[in-house]
Length: 636
Image (cartoon, rainbow, N blue to C red; front, top):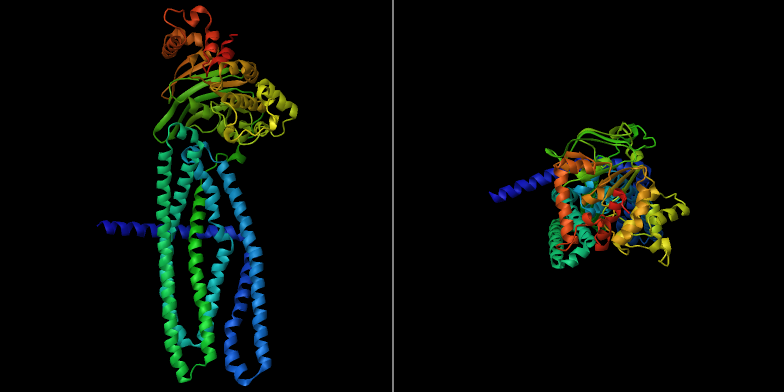
């Protein structure tokens, strides 16, 4: 029963492969259509070259049966000249074919990669949350590379091989139709084997590309997290995980080799059977005098022109199977709905003032698993809205909605009384500034990272942003200044330096709506003090949203929203929430007590009682709240 189940699964896979082939074939034709004239030229060159190639096997018939027996020197030279001219034509056609079709195919692949990358860059954040980085890279690079044989010489060679085999078969029928009809039976059997092999190879190639994407994703993660890997001595585990993936890929490749080997075996057996058949039948006809030696030699050579294309068709066919799988995976990506799919139908977003309103907003990542429930609040221009609550309460999701990374399932998000779902996303995001706990920096120079936000910024604007964020203290110490290469993700800088660059980048963007996610968490007390003025400049007059894990950082926030299980359970100022003696007061008291235990010895007064809370916090060297705390509380 188990075997039957396996056979059923294979049949299903083959059926899916053929269905995918039928669905993808129109896309392949559509892909080649813009270059139809070029492909026609290539096919013409190939056809001329193959016809010229038929001159050589025809020469022995006239040479042996006519020129040599009759001693006709003129005919001998004509035959030799025809062979040389045909060979030259064949070589020139092959050269022109490579120069036209191969280069055009490579250009088309470059365009496809650019098209896929452009589409992927427009996909919503949810797509990136559900796919590994390496998998996305594999989609852009490896899957498109698989299409090379489809849009390059592969398809032309395939069609050319079929035409050559057809011409050779017609000539063989003319030379000896009885023998050729016998050969035709074996060709039908071979065609059935070849078609069956393609139906087997399709699912294998698809699985290989999926495995390659998974392995690339894991490898990318391992390299990106190499410090964590080494810190916890997890190199053996990474080797095991990667090794398991490689073994799975190896098993897939071995299955491919087995399938191709069976086709090659069938081809070899076919050639052997055909050779034996020709020797038996041809030999008898030679003995009977119904076949000349010249005709026999020409027949054998033309048979090579029939068998060789058939064999090459098999190899090209396997490559085309892989290409169709790559094209199918490209379609899967292109079917993903971009976040700006209806951008043209949306209204332009005028200059943003900064009023943000959530009106009964609900959101869920997965169906029937709500993350936010009927959230409503208003953030007026120039105010600070702080978000607090335990992990998983919905703070980051709410910020993602503010940044238009997601769209609400129900309700509306209004910016300056305009529903975000009705305005152009790119226009709106031009007014956003984001400083996260772990900001991403590119593997370029300091200047390139700053200009990434605003490429047209002047040198003066760059210098001013660097000064306000107090980046000049370390930038000016580097021999290359702003042209210093900072490495991938800014690894050549300290955490505080990276964070200050992120703040300088936000200053350069000059946003109307600002998102701070523990923006000073990577800074020590000294660094926090140095960028306090820069943050104050950054937040002044802007609508700011602050995710705060340390409640002491938000005492002077305009509004504090307390979230639990995706709902706003309390809202108000710091003083109002403490007076209410509710959830916020409980969280603050618990956290404040922990801070006392950390900073004070038994019997000492608390920082609040002594009036030295800011100074104590600074001297402790703690990270995550000092500068932002003083900024929002107004303390010096």
